[in-house]
Length: 432
Figure 1 (cartoon, rainbow, N blue to C red):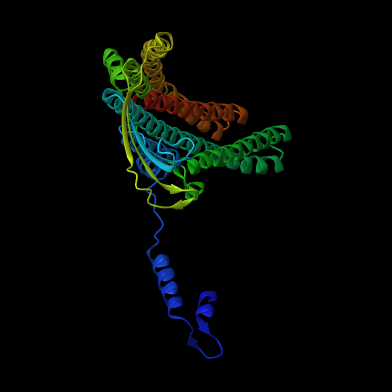
Figure 2 (figure 1 turned 45 degrees about the vertical axis):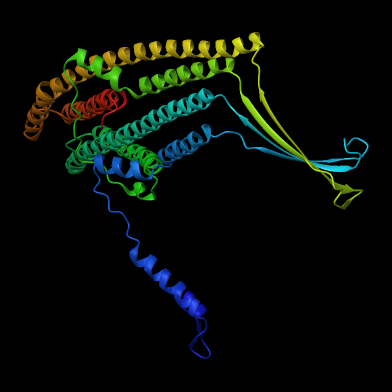
């Protein structure tokens, strides 16, 4: 309505300016064409959205494009110089005022230009690995947040289920208490346990909010604040052969590839530094025209003079030139040692994570196949006994609490297993 009042004169009800109609059409077009993205609420959906909208990933892409522009500049020669000199008749050879115009151009040794380009190309490759690592870390962070949100949702589900059972028991105990069948202390103990469970549910909901804030940052959208708790958690498959894990980590790990990029860049810089022993070329030309008397332009009848000069820079200071080369070689040696350190660390981390993953899978199998089924059977038996008054309330509640703790322990084990697997596959192998 506000825009319409701007476009329409309310007294005459006529259109004031045609350009306002264009503004209105553009506004309506943008409003109608703007469609809010509808999330499928899967981990793949969140990852794909983050890869398109995360600002850190976009920034890394801009850095690569900026360096590619530098590659174009690396093979260009310096800008020429143009000089204009006024010569007084006291210093002019012709005894009259003269003007001298000069032009000079420095031309680096041809291999220096090619080595500069090589260094920039290696830098681009390194930045490309850095961008890929940023992408990998983004995918891992989204996966980690998704798994954490899933774990919180599962814990809330189990606690709410336990709370419902406690409320049913409270109702029965209130009836029994009114009939003086049970003591007040038993009822109070039950109510205290209910309050503790309710408090834990509230704390888990707050934890879920924190995870959603992290997803909002990763995906760069406020819609993440309303993401539901995931109900499914697709498992990541990992190689079973340890030697295959080791070889894949060495060839695909982004941190190793980044360090290899630093080594290649340092090698190119050594070759570029060695070009300091070759001279640079400079050419210049000048023309002196004796056509000035005082400050007035006149024809003195004298002919102008031309001059040309070719010069070479002489890299004769061996000590300083040698220091530049040695500096580049020392950096190369340091980068190679860092690469060895990175490879050793990656292999160790991959092997440790594979052992932890194997242990998590063993514990998960034990919980799912042995411990939890027996705990559920115990709860079922005690509930039946309590119904026929052959067991007390606290014994049943203790068994229910044990089952609840075991189910939440299983959720934590599943969460750890997925994070270990994601650490190996996503961060270690750079795959997702």
